[in-house]
Image (cartoon, rainbow, N blue to C red; front, side, top):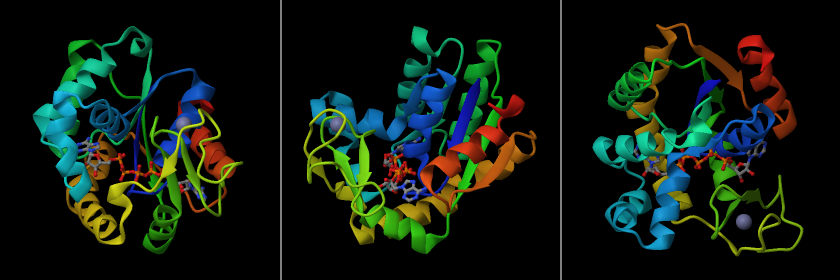
Length: 217
Ligand code: AP5
Ligand code: ZN
């Protein structure tokens, strides 16, 4: 199954993507996690994108599409994947369609996670992220780690992402409305979109997402 997860920053895309990917036995591909891994490892790509992520802007499309295409071409993604944070605008959505057409495949579903803005701000303010692997996320109230400041999964140090400061979150939300939301209409015309209310406990949102997938996941 080839799935795109879309929704505002802090909607719970990463949280749901990890759970759904495990359930469906497909890789979770997050462009945000890939960029942060490059920044942490000090690669050339990481140096190019560091300031953009800090400021909450979008990385240029050519760079993002090339990185996503490279990841989707790995053997573990041959039979499907769950994209989280990509595509993020119409140009990227069209580039993805072309990439899939070249390999004779297409998307099966787009899950749109809907969360009110006050809740997004609350979720991001309380989020703590693992320095070793940014797909390991916690929340001071909703999902506290067993030991304060320490990742349950790998023992890495937990920190607050630089782009989770309030001013940057507002910028990311504005970018989401302007650049990313239009892809919901684009995929809607292809009959691919299921909108899910993500204002519920994590397991309930997972249940709703699975139910919305073709064949019930
Ligand atoms: P990215 O990493 O994709 O960030 P984002 O889209 O802003 O999403 P977040 O990671 O902030 O949130 P999420 O929806 O995954 O929520 P989470 O599950 O953590 O992108 C970062 C940057 O990279 C961009 O700004 C851009 O610069 C660049 N970038 C990435 N992709 C790009 C692209 N395609 N093109 C160009 N640039 C790109 O949950 C949030 C918190 O809420 C957590 O603490 C969690 O524990 C908690 N939580 C989750 N679900 C629930 C629930 N149901 N109830 C209560 N709490 C919950
Ligand atoms: Zn970790």
